[in-house]
Amino acid sequence: MDDGFALLEEKVHKAADLVTKLRKENRTLTEEAQKAKAALQEAEKKLSALQKEKAAASGQAQDSEALKREVDQLTRERTEVRNRIAKLVELLEGLD
Image (tube, rainbow, N blue to C red; front, side):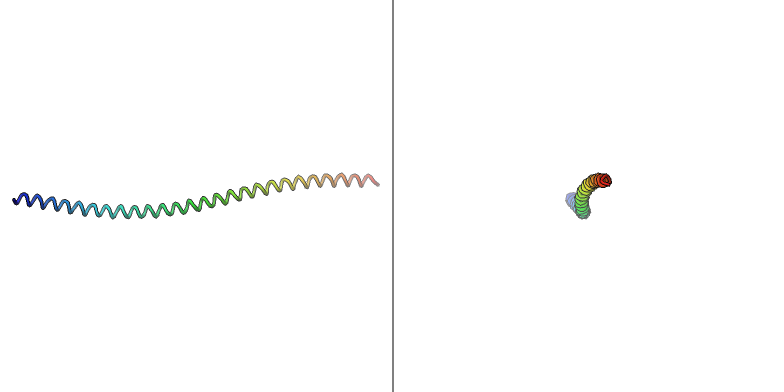
């Protein structure tokens, strides 16, 4: 009977040790999960900020391209006006 009681006592101690070990592991895993969640939230914030920056840069690139086209058109118009004025000056000089 003492052997049976000793065996039972040993199993209870092992079970108690196992429960203690599992609780400790559970706390550790919970802490790691919380840290991972925090890191994920921070990464999502950074991603969101980068996406906004990308959208803004894309908008700026479009604005820049539109301005470039406008400058090109104004340059062509200036050249055309310059040529027309040169022709008028020649015509006026020919009147003398």
